[in-house]
Image (spheres, rainbow, N blue to C red):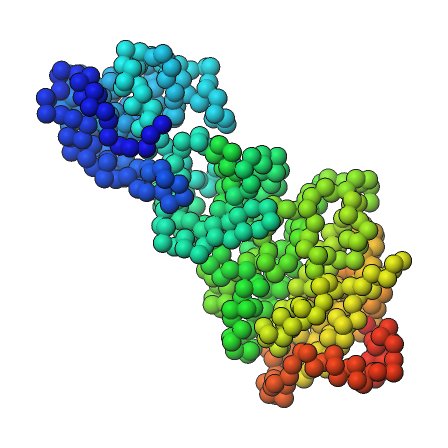
Length: 577
């Protein structure tokens, strides 16, 4: 089918003799206005007439005027109401094709806008099934039985009026391959395309008349497109995202809609104007290291921890894990955040996996892609085809929070240096694994930094990362449900960090992770100095992360690496963490 707006000259010869001899396809005022109302779609070459333009142009007066011009004799209130309430698109198509007089047959046959698109074969019009490109066998109309050319042109022009409207209550849309997409504003799409190993994501603006959800995050959306023909992955991801959309958590991404058009499978999300967390670290490195920044960072960590807890405990019947947490999958939304720094949100939830049974009772592996190597926990080395617990995500979160802390203290260059020094956070020693000694060395050195001493917010965070998150032993998913290493003071509603947390304990789950951050935020709210003491930052000016390990290596040259942590604890006169 062509995309032009003009008809062959033969169509004017087929026009009813009741029409004025000067009337052609674009001779009427309404048809000219409909032609000018077409909007270019910047995702594909198809144009469309926006719904608000159609409503504005097709008033009762305009419809009546066109009916008179076409020689329709019996213009009843019922006919006018039928067009206004049920057949605006059909009437507009008839105006554009110069066949307005057929509207009476449309009324008699009961054809309405909801039946579009239609295909006409040997004079018989039939609609498409709502979820496929197959023609329905349940409905048919004979409006165009004697109008071969008009029927062909009608089918061609109908697509201009069929751009979908994405609603708050709709979710999964099946679109015919000829259906235009209501994505506009090509200028803002420059440089707005991102690729991953299994999809591409590009930026677009849905025409305001074709989106019916709030604008709290702005008009721009992210379109995630899967590889051509990948229907099984699309259906699985669509089901997962629909379930998770019920959570409505401010730190979990929400899928606004999904659609299939031909062999293209896509998901629509709000566009994160602030990019992802790694981009934030790289691009905002000059932001002032002050109390506001530290408080914002800790609050965002708490929000992410809470989002992970909600994700992990989806319902009594099902639990869910993310499986691919990394800074690139944490987006920064700038709207609806008073700090100006944005709100961090866990994304790529389509890769999340639901389980209806407890982890230890499953015998088959998850069967989905694996997390980025750098952020995978130690158990990933031997559990490629085995069930994966939710504590997998907790290890990844510990890696991300440690990198976040490095960025806060030392900046982007030192974080990049740290990332280049090791490709993962643990060492494989055959029968066992351990946290990479360089990671432990950096953490211990950072704990001696005057900006994060023991009893400070960043100091407590580092202690929790080392003692509860980056713990190789992940244990049984459903054992150790009680949080034995955290206690609640009678005057507090959140846990405090105990000094005897051992590094050989079972890794925390997401509930404990959330409680840890909750304790830090609780104390922060009562004591702003807990997050930031200016004298410590003045004293630490010019400190570099790359010097920490060298200094520790020089001071501990005679000790095996495995004794570093014991030595550090002894020097401080504290129990080992």
